[in-house]
Image (cartoon, rainbow, N blue to C red; front, side, top):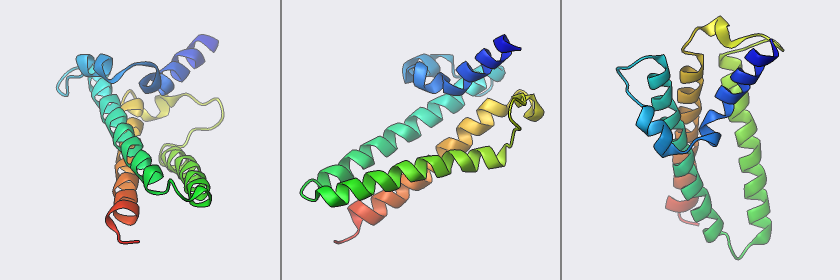
Length: 134
């Protein structure tokens, strides 16, 4: 059981451990489940990279206001927890329960949902902080 838990944990953090190029080389939307999952991780990595770019632009925009920077960073940390909680709520698992409840597409589906939420947040941040007059 410990081995299964370790594998599941590694799959959960896999996008952070592998670079985009590694996942992209494995991606085939018409392929097997692992290849499809690689495509989902590429989506998640791309969404995170886009968010990071907008986040950095906002920090540059706020550079002269340390209080605003602190508040913005705090809001973003809370949003990340909310995003992850929303994904967990969509695919609830009890403590110690295996992801198999949702089948072999669990990691693909959660990565795609996380990417969708991240893209929505990026769009909001861009419109609210960079495109809006201040």
